[in-house]
Each structure stands twice: as C-alpha cells, then as structure tokens.
Image (cartoon, rainbow, N blue to C red):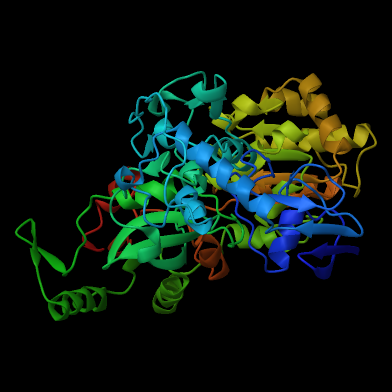
Length: 560
C-alpha cells in the first residue's frame, strides 16, 4: 500500500491508483469534465487540477498516479482560481447560452461545474464563430456549438465500441467533432449504438427522440434487462408520467457495463405497433373484439375437442420472461421430445466444462467466431471483439455467408454450406500435426487435405489459422445459430472437441433474450409443420417470421 496525505488526511492506496481515484475513495469531490469512469484518463480539460507538494505547477489528478508520502491539496485558493479560469475559457469559446440548450437545468456537467465553483456570470465576453448543426442522423443530433472538446465521445466510440467513427478535425478554436473524414453523422460509419450521447457532458450530442422531454434528474430511473438478444445488457429506462422517454446503458450492470446497440437503445422506442388490449376472435374472416371468457372458452373447446391421434403444436417466443416459459412448459409438457443442444452439452469436451461469460472476450488474445455475425446481431459481443483488435487480438471468422465482422478479421474462412464440421476437424488435424494439441483427440477425424477438399478452404489457410489458434494463450470460440441449426450436431461436437484441444473458452450466442432459459426448460425443439390440428403460439411482443406464418397457414385452429 502507498501512504498519501490528502487535505490533511493520511490514507493508504494501492499502487497505480490515480489521485482522482484516491480522492473519490476518500469521499473528496474533484470536479471533472473530460474524465469518465468507462474510458481511459485523458487529462484534457484540466478542471481536476490539484496542488502536490514539491511540484511547481498544478497537476491533473485524473492522470497522476499516487506515490509514497505524497501530499495533495484539493481546495486551495490557487486551485479554485485555476478551475474558475478554465471554466471561463470554456464558456467563452462556444455558444453556451444555457437557456437555449436542452441539457440546461441539471443535465449539463459544464453548467453544474460552474455552479459548484460559485460562478454567476462570464468574466470574458464570448467570441465564437457558429458551427452548423448536424441533424442528418435519425437518432442523434450533433451540435459543435455546445462541444467542449473533452473527447469523451471520441474515446468511447473507439475504446468501448471499437468503431472509431468520431474524431477531432482542425486545431485551436476551429477544432470540431467530426464523423469519419468530415462526413455527415447520418452518412458515416456510425452504428447508432448511442454510447456517445450517454457520455457527452453537455448538449453537443443529444438523443433526438427524447430532446426537450424534461431533465433526466427529474425523471424516474428504472433498471431492467434488454431483451433484444441473448447477451442480456443492463438498461436504465428514463420514465416520466408513465411514458418511456429514453433508454440508457447501465454502467454497473453485467455483462455489458453500459454498452447498448441500436436495438437496445433506440429501436425499442420506435415500435409503432398498436398494443392489443383485448382478445379477438375471428368471425366471418375478420378478427372481432371479445371478452376473455369468450376467448378462453373457445380455446378450451377446440383443444378438448381434439380426437385421438390429433395433435396440437405449442410454440413460444424466447423473448418471453422465464416465468412465462416455465408456465408454457407446465401446460404443454406432454408434447416435449428430446432437445437439440442439451444432449450435446452433456457429452462435449470443452475445457471449461461449459460456456463462459461474455467478459472472457476482454482478455482473449485470439477469437474464433463460427456461425455468428456480430455486426448484424449480438452487437455488444461484437463491440468487445472489435475494441480488442488494436491491442493485438487475432480475429478468425468462419461463415459461408457474407459476414460483416469478416471485414475486420485477420482470417475469414468461407466453407461450403454445411461443411463446418469438416473444416473444424481439419483445424484439429492440423493442430495435431503441428504438435499444438493440448488435450489429445481421437484420430477418427478428417485430415487437413480432406477437410480442404470438402469445405473448399485451402489447406494452406487451414494450417496458418491452426498456428494462430495453437499459439494463443487465451483463445475464445464464439458460436451462434449458424452452427447450432438442426443439422449441425456434428459441427457442434467438432467445435467443442477443438475447444478442448486449445483449452479455449466457448461462448454460445443463443437466439433471443431468454433462449438459455428455454434451453434449461427443454423447450429448444424444432417445429416441423406436419399434421397438426391446432396450434398455440405465445408470441409476446416478438415478430413472427414469414416462414413461421407460412408453416402455420395449414393449421385449422390457431391461437396467438
């Protein structure tokens, strides 16, 4: 431990702790603007300056690590004068007329910092050139007139999301926030995750859908879980008078730590479908409103009227709550048969004995993605992969289809459809030939040459990929629905055997929000539309696919 004295208090801290972190642990408030807990310290705004005994100039506390016998003063006349001067310059540089900004009144960190220093006016007359507002994005407004160039959004876009869309153009007073090489934000590489608007300390980046709906501090915050996919990102819903105003990422929630994708942050607010508030019964070809008693009586008569040999199909969306899925199973348990994935899970040889947590991607030095497009779905998992690439993580993508993550991959393997098992076995054979097998695998697998002939992937590529996989100290294999489809049992076995050879963690990105709960309840079966006289579909707020609608058309009686 390191002994530090802060404002006369002698305290102990771990090595590597910054002065700002030490002050926060000690309950001492240091004003900041460019600092944010989710991104690396930057030291740009200088508002967090403190006096350190023995140092000639004031120091930025956010980037200064503590050292033994350090003496820090956080509230001297010199420090207060510096903070007021910094705020004065910030207010004079851009258009910070607060009464015209939607963040004014408690949501603006710049304004709050000024009030905390007792500022009631601007000592310097503002002298700024107006910038054009960028309203090209469907969800985000970019106003450089409100920007303080703290670069929080730039760092979050790169460090947290791995997208690197945002940057700073020009220098000095002409500096401005831009997307890509000066493209309008709506025409840029922005993926609409909204992380930038959540970290922005002013009104420079705002959520268009919630602008001028009131201050966040005056609204109710409700913590929940996003049901857009199976990642399970933590969300914070901003609610006022029963209306959902905005959705933020929950910085304290596992596994996402504040990250959200477009589906979780914006699409939930854009659903224009009318909610059904009463049952409907089809009469003369049209759905007519009915009472619950009428609807349930009809349903009971139809099901009880099924004769021997006639069957009912029961389907449930995995967006439903786990409690609803359990009730669904309790009602239709007699219709269950052997599951798809569960049988394989019992016999697989994964080194971890089970799928790992999403956070394993943060430490991986090699990521193998099979049957999943982490740009189109499960995007937050994709963020964790993309942001690790600049640090040297190797990315290998296996997908016979166009995969947007493949554009960033070191290797993109495109085996012929249905040959995943052959390719994976070829990788295993190649690892054995290279002496990189960490577990020992049966010899009854395809050799590299055979795998190349079956899959269409060159044998040289299989060998090179195997060398990267075998050299990794913390490999992670991510697989999705492309591999867990009904005819992919051999591929799943091969994948887990490969994971055993590599001592790799495996991460199964199941389908929708409660796919794992459905699997635990043995509800992960394939619907085969044949001979059903009735069908019960627990859809919730999910969208039925065109294929499902087509498959259910021949069923004489359908309850949704």
